[in-house]
Image (cartoon, rainbow, N blue to C red; front, side):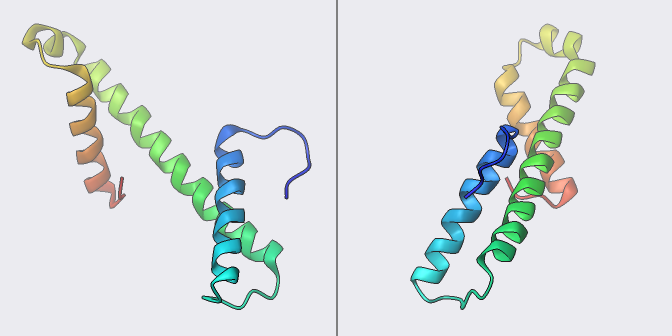
Length: 98
């Protein structure tokens, strides 16, 4: 369990997920965990990277829509629907699963 200074939200989520995953895998005997700290660190890193990639995807989608704001406004399209579609396309292009 993490006991250091406050961490960014992404890291906090990654730590909680890593703890839960290691506990469940070990409890159900799916894996034999020799060093829980190492396993937690690896899972935390993967989860954190995934969250960062999703945050970047969201920012890129918003930027694309911002660049086309006038066209969107003139078309009376729904921003949330467009954002979702742009995120889906960017995710597909990047091989990222939402």
